Length: 359
Image 1: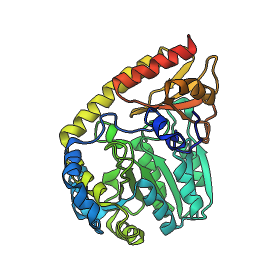
Image 2: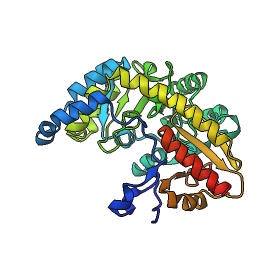
Image 3: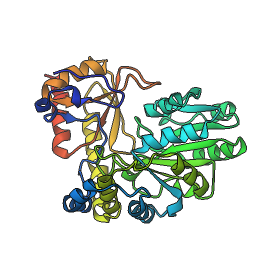
Image 4: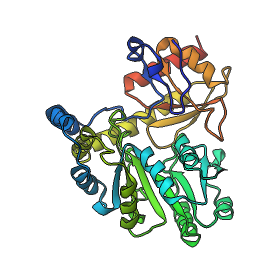
């Protein structure tokens, strides 16, 4: 069994079909409870109808469902084939003078800018202070028509953007005619009213993008959305290709976004299981844990094993994948990330890690 290097975690498709289905993949950050029951029932009942006809090119039903779920006007919402499509389209449309990218952060921030031929500059988050933003540095480096990407919560550290920092940056963006792109792909895992969505309704200097595949557990279907002021949303939608969101994805999210029991159950489970998982990981000598606030955890190797690639090799006989984080700018090969999965699966990983360190 081999592990192919991937910018987004373990590449199970490099394995033979019989092997890939055995993998316990801690490198992908998906809701451990799986599909929304309401979304699943809709797929089971209507999948053939949705497969045999073209999707709604206007995304009407799913847009209405998302508007109700997230308390946002329908004309602020655009749908994409995942959040990544919206990022790439937005960069090509806005064409900022430069893009400021946090480090560490999701690789597609930089890649979307490079695909559009736009210069990028990195700024380091403070690892010793909950990956805080360097506000003074950003104020000095933000020029007119800049674009800044920010994760809220950020990947891979799982830390939330502080509200005061967001408001300060929004004020800077307004002053310098620039744009903040806030990635809230994991915000649904966080309890409480912490989203930046309400600030974009009437403000053309901020956009919120979301992957809906993480919390709603459909990475294979591909769906994401953005929230922005109506003029910016309309312009973005005009740049997207027709039928960019397939029919089964629209159908599933139309029902899943309104599945309140599933949503609350998922948040409660992830909060409680993540806390238990973090505690168990913290008790293993040789690991430094950055707990964050979402369904994934950043760790640093400090013991006899110092390279996450070596750890991955030791875990492969157990059919376990982890997310090596050496390719994140601002981190090195001693860092790795784990998704919090079910209690049984998390216990299996804890046992494997203890065996690796203390056979």
